[in-house]
Every structure is written in C-alpha cells, then in structure tokens.
Length: 305
Image (cartoon, rainbow, N blue to C red; front, top):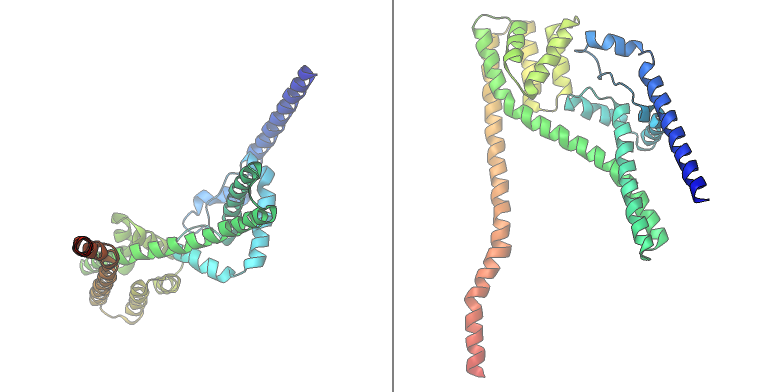
C-alpha cells in the first residue's frame, strides 16, 4: 500500500512538471504582440516597458488581473493614481499599479493565514478574530502599496528640487554660450545624471515626436509637482514665445530655486531642533533630576529614621 502511494505521488509530480513545462514552452513560443515588436523603436514615448510573460503569470495572471479590476472598481480614484504615477516619472500604468496592489495584498494575506494556522495549531486564538485578522491583512497590503507610491513621489520630488538649481545654472551657461534652448536642453541632459536629467529627456522625447518646445514645457509644468520647476517651465515657455532674454530668465529661476531651498533647509532645521529637544526634556532631564534629588531623599529618610 505504501509503495502504491509513493508511485502515485511520483506520477502526479511528473504530470504536474510536464504540464508546467508545456505551459511555459507555449508562453515563450507565443508570437509577441505588435506592442512588444514596436517597443524597442519608440522607447522614448512608450507608456511602459514590454514585459515577457512567464509560465506562472500565464497560469495565475488572469486571476490577478480580475482582482486588480475589482480593486479598481472598489477604490476608484483613478485620476489620483495617474497623477501620482506621472509625477513619479515611471512608465508604469494604472493597471500595473493595481496588479501590484493585489500582489501586495495577497502576500500580506498569505502571511496572516500562516500565522493564524500556527496559532490555531497551538490552540490559541478565536477563529472569527483570526479570520478578521486575515482580511485586515489583505486590506493592509493594498493600502501599504498606495502609501509607498506616495512616499516614492515625495522622495523623487525632493531630489528634483535639490538638483534643479544646478541644472538651471548649466542651462543658463549653455544658452549664454550661444546655443539655442533645445540644444541647451539636449546638452545638459547628456552631461547630467539624476531625476532632472530624466525630466529633460522626457521633454526632448516629446520634441522628437513633433511637439514644439513651448508645448513640451507647458506639459512639463502641468505634470510636475515641484513648484519651482513648474515656474521654470512656464518662464521658459514665455521666454521662447515672446522673445524675452533667456539667460536672464534662467539665472533668475536658478536664484529663486536656491532661495527656496535655503528657506526649506531653515524650516527643516527648525523642526529638527524641536525634535532634538524631546529626548532632552523627556529622558535626560528626568534622569538628571533623579540623580540630583535621590541622594538627598535617602539622607532625609536615614535622618528621620
């Protein structure tokens, strides 16, 4: 009987492995769609990178996509998601973000189920409470992915604000050397690195597809969440359209950006100074008071005794 069970288990394992190999081979040999064939030639303007499907995704992908559609219908706020993804400067679409939310929720749910099973095996925990804990973990994973997106957007915009003054100064130097606005943008984007270089590459990509420089700068100012960069893009648009001296505009924008950064550093320093006082007031000062008064208190007790 035992040998029959072992033989049956081995046959089932071989059958499952064969099915997985067949599905994986079919997914790899499937003719790529038009989007993936054209992607390498229009990479600058594509909304996302082409993805090669795996065997696991070919099996479980439709279920995950249905879950993503359900999350989209329940949560909504598609305009907010699109806006944050645009500010993040990623090629990821809203559908891909919803899929990631589902995967995060499933991962949190699986962890909660494993913990609940461990607690149930030990005989502790209310079944209804464990069920609610698993459902709350599913919701927590979905919300955590949304919060991570917001944190990533804020972190990227802080880096943009830090890099912007230097980029503006380099643009001013390039224009002062005799280059046009588009050539100056291309030169600065080529020699610089970081988030601002990516933004300049996006503007240049729009211009390569036929968009004029003022329209590309207007789109840049509308999609960015950094006020200084939005003012810079608007000033660049006005300077190109009305013939304002571009060097003076760029120098003025760089000076405003540096002043804004200095003011933000002063505000951050004031907040950190207050935060530094908390351990002094609530930890060091009480310990100092105890060390100062405790010997006298012991002496009084010995005297009265």
